[in-house]
Length: 64
Image (tube, rainbow, N blue to C red):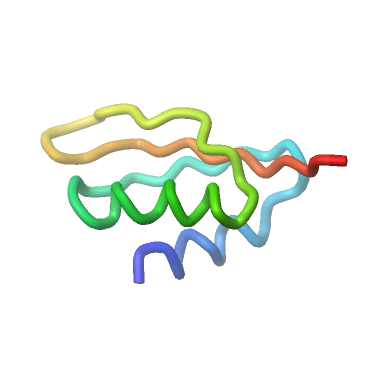
């Protein structure tokens, strides 16, 4: 379910835009970055922000 919500927000991005997502450790932190990469987005950074919470920065890029 976490990636479904993230995917909705990613679909609103224009080329070159960034999306920051807060994720909990475990399955969300493993699956969201992996699935974003598989769908052609670039995971720019994964940063710890609080106990067991991470900020994932995703960029939409079009490759020619």
